[in-house]
Length: 499
Image (tube, rainbow, N blue to C red; front, side, top):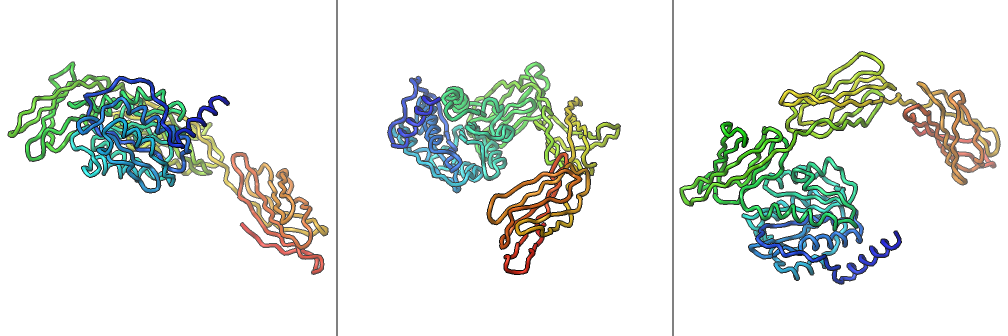
């Protein structure tokens, strides 16, 4: 453990001092690739300087086998911070030596983790000639994150994918798996990696191979493959003025079921949906133009096995009369969900209908301190049903004590008394914060409605709070501030109530 810490510290100091990063292992050069590769780099204050330096080493290790140039690979970096910043445009560093130095000289900006802002900024730069991006090459985004964002990422990320950008995500922290799975290109097991920052070299080759699958594919190919859909991408051959595309696709085992779509010449991608799971499709893209002749491009795509939903049911935000139910995953093949719930024991059952595009609902009008059986049933387009159950408990109704009052029983002592709280109280917790001296907490049985408070000398102030305790949650506190008058004045105290 100590040896690893010393080694890690040495690497950080070496990088921070501007020295060369350690040489990655020998890799054969990669040619015949063409694409714009953008790194979305978490440069905010949520990332330590050591983690930032390790990510820079990982970036260079990932990139160094590629050939760089205007007809090869171009790369850029956008910082995630309070305001997104481009470190350098795509066409600035077109040799390995200059690119390596540029990555090594990249400095952390700190600030907030505004990833949504950075994604919107990336959408502009990936298709901007001023940023050195090229209009007719594959676009790849590699987002390296510690798993946290202070703003929404779902909408800007979806816009990027709708524009044909392939998204890889590397999470070095404790990110939300469902959120990151939805953000990455599909299938997520090929585009999403969770790894400790010190173990980034483990995924380097796998990630590089995934990028190669995109930037070496200069013909019709498929991404975002699910059990019922996939996205087709192809190079820009036509424009809206010069022609259109005819797209034909059918199951390889039944070509008579061929379907046809026409797509504007301005498009370079299309999502095919309502497909059968675990089925191989033959796809043909026919460019139709009176200006140029382009040969038909074909590909073969196999959809994934049908996913099952729900595989997880979560109960949260439980109160006396309601709780929140959520489930995962959400699938295109599900038409709607039924949420059945009823108290245990008992035969009373109620049903909520939820649209198949949603994955949560609130169950209301429940009895307090009651256990419910909740069953979420997914109803598929095919007519299949899949159910999963969970137990949920409502909370007891919180109550607070009434009429907290004090009686002076000595020069430095008070008796605090209160009326009982409603419900099945298990006891009371009495906290006294003194102006001078330590605070104290007393726990008493539900039959006891008074305590003796000491070490409250004349001329000082104290705050006393009484809180009922229930089985599933604490009740509401009732607090009062006690002002003990100096001994030279009339004996006694003043108190003010604070709810």
